[in-house]
Image (cartoon, rainbow, N blue to C red; front, top):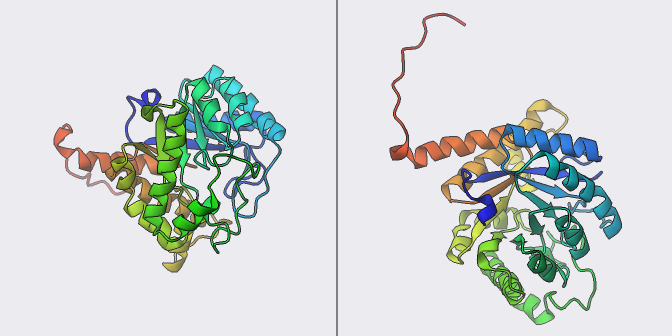
Length: 322
């Protein structure tokens, strides 16, 4: 993606949820002024990209009407385009929302259905000549799976020509999670190519947290290089995901969101994965906070590219007592 060139990897993509019910920060930025202020603060802290969403897709959430989603997002995009030059991504799987935001300057569409949810989405992105993130979404191919039943079902209508056929769903359900991800995303890329979206405008997302078990989340992160082997840059969203919180809980770490320590621990755990993403050459990590992730990225890059870094000599510690 040319639009993301010349930035340190991974690029930190700040999350701006203009919603009342997102799982981590629902209601915090649920107005145009608050959302814009939060977005600009993320940029000031080091975000190299923004991802704006007007609909929560957390477990148990309900879809909002297209008109409401547009009403939430478009004014935010319009104002941010006046005040920052960094790329703006729109977290939506609905083509009408995508078109409305692309028309006012959005740069990237982040489709969490990988073009399976709305049959017009690929055409809208192609016509706008913009970039796209295509995500693996297990909820679509195994809606009755225990980890998927709690999520909303992503399909605007049953006649959707891009939705998975029953034969494809059955085939995927027999695969291990890595093969299922690869099958799903190869299908998404095929749809993109058929409407004329070039490969260099595509990033792939392994769909961490969407209807996956704890083990499956970990396996996909461990083997994320498969997406590079497919020939694409990687977009990774792991910030504050439930499987991370579960790992902390099993280790006896404070995860109580009512306490400052518990809330911060989620971001520390998320930043560890940004360190891993840096080592694995991930292009973009989607994050709620910036500071912890910037530290993890920059320290890991200092180690990975040690031979290329300037040397420094250190003075002795001061004998003064603090």
